[in-house]
Image 1 (cartoon, rainbow, N blue to C red):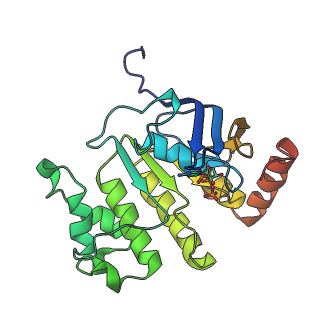
Image 2: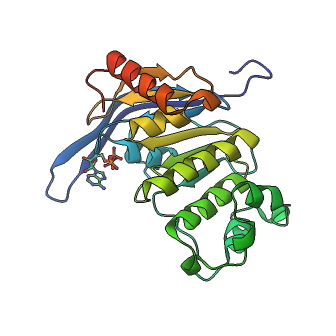
Length: 246
Ligand SMILES: Nc1ncnc2c1ncn2[C@@H]1O[C@H](COP(=O)(O)OP(=O)(O)OP(=O)(O)O)[C@@H](O)[C@H]1O
């Protein structure tokens, strides 16, 4: 039971998630994975490739119910969970604006989206179709769709992979701008330490598979101060704290 006025955090306590192949081979993806994300916090799940990060997000999205343990999503918002995946998954026969509006509950579908499109630099692209967008613009449209729903929690799965570094960096800054304007509890999966240090309040550091929490790295530096030299220092602090991590 939460005290009145205190919003519930995201609570994750997955005891076991095992995949079984048709040949009967077992792959233990998660074992004893336990962490929390505070309300309004931007957290990153950082771990090596194949450790079970996407599996964790799929469980939180309700896409995989074959696990033991439990989780509790934060309350509130017009839509409890929004997700941004590696692939933007836009409907090809709908414009950018229609893609965003279709994600909204019917009663708020005509909501004013001008500020959101503006902040993401998408205003001139509202009537374009996904096939007319670069990958970077399609990712921006996916971010617009996620934030438009004003979710109680935003889950992001490596949303900047397969972009050139310049585009990825621009999108990271756009994500931070839109998140600062609409603070949302967010959990982002990444195996990119620098990206996690740039974006997160706290980093949940995972072991190799089966994923368990090795520890929490509190970034503790306000975002405007996270320039290149500061990030280099943070990377070195991180490696001192977690010499065996990513
Ligand atoms: N449907 C499945 N059937 C069998 N094994 C699976 C399945 N999905 C994932 N796995 C295995 O579970 C483990 C965790 O996979 P997952 O995709 O969660 O890792 P990840 O940390 O997100 O990796 P990456 O950073 O490379 O995306 C891997 O060994 C993967 O091969």
